[in-house]
Amino acid sequence: MQRLQLLERTEDDRRARRRLGAALGNRLRAATTDPARMLPLWRTFSVGEPVRRAELATAMSTELVHDAFGTGVLVEVDVDGELPGTWVRAAVCIVPVAIAGEMIWVASDFPWFEDDPDAVHGPGAATQTLRGLLPTRSPRTLVDLASGSGALGVAIACATGADLVAADLNPRAAALSELTAALNGLALEAQVGDLTDAVTGRHDLIVCNPPFVLDRPADRTMFRDSEDPRGYAGLAHDLVPLLDEDGIGIYLTNWRYGPALPHPLTDLAEDLAALPACDVLVLERAVVTAHDYVRVWTDDDALAGEWEQALLAHRTTHVGTGAVLVRRLPDDEDDEATHVSTSTAYDLSLDGLAGLVTGWLAAQQAARALTSEDRLVAAPYVVEELDDQASVRATGGLALSVTGPAAQVRSTAVATLEALRSPGRLSDVLAAVPALGPSPRTAADLLRTLLRAGLVRLA
Ligand SMILES: C[S@@+](CC[C@H](N)C(=O)[O-])C[C@H]1O[C@@H](n2cnc3c(N)ncnc32)[C@H](O)[C@@H]1O
Image 1: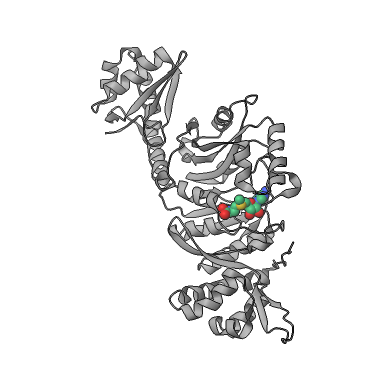
Image 2: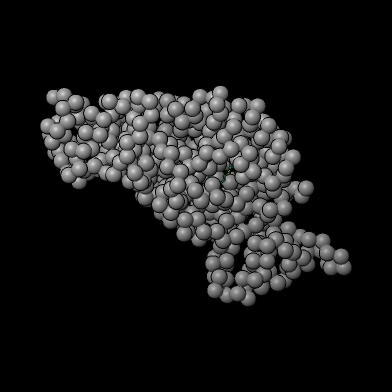
């Protein structure tokens, strides 16, 4: 196994590496329209080939090559019969990546270092998923937790102009996050710390693609991964104090299914309901067998077999994968209850997710602000009945539902939706739905619940 060379983290080293990143980013951007200049840069930083120092100096400048040595981004290569220092290679891989349409230069480790426990991986499918889930709004401050290469935070900051904070447990990841930021013209001083430990202040947006992987054999870790010992909601509890009013925290996670285990989404919703005043969305994107889950991570048969056995030993036959999004309420609403919505709409395309999450946030706000003068109209829905329970589910979108005893659901929720086939106010619902009784409060609570689930919307 090839081992990585240390990237020094003294203040001077970090400052020098940030300066180098900014200058190299300018060169790379300028070279995108100049193939002759791009070729040596590409071979060196993106492919990882050894190149002659003189050739690289022509593309980059002698001074920049010198600075890249000084900061550990370039190293010498011994070649028989050549003077020392004639050949060089990159110690850091730098490639262009598009994240939700934002093209950025990303610094990570070359793939041949992937078994090194310090190796920093570039953005992957999970990074793109998390980016795809973000509502369309522009945060002023943004935290990328467990930032790795820094690609996710840098892409969001480039697209929105947000001030970026990043933190990772791995000092090499913090160094590469800083380099990625500098390559894209951003100033970043990344922190080293365990999840939220190194983050202070309150922020508009916190994103985290965490190192949570279920039961990967301990001696074969990647990303220093592990499960959160506090359960699936643990990180949400850490994020809320770091969120500004109306701020959003969002993380990816996965949960265990098995016939002998409690239902993970019920458990998660109960844990999340204990958060201080928030609107919470749990989005389950897929449920896969233990076998398929393991195969997402490895094609090594021996490791896969060992890993699957470890999952089964924890009574896990299937794994649910998804995200938890938490919106902290404004401080003057901090005595309000937390509401949790759970979506299991599995066929949502990544392209539409940001719009759906944005719509969900708007619906939660509309539900909190609802007045008796607001006009509402029903959205398309289906009723599903099982034993004596019934669910009214919105068709399309996040497919959220309202569930309860069948007779009650029919006489209240379904009757209200029928009454709102054409737009109406609270008073119209009270007149049309006798089961709600004379209390405007009961009717208003039901309308809020239906709004939150996307079963009615403002007309
Ligand atoms: C799945 S990668 C995510 C990288 C990047 N955010 C992305 O989406 O491409 C997980 C990152 O978590 C970091 N990590 C592992 N354990 C951590 C911890 N306890 N606290 C903070 N970061 C941690 C790893 O070093 C790794 O960079």
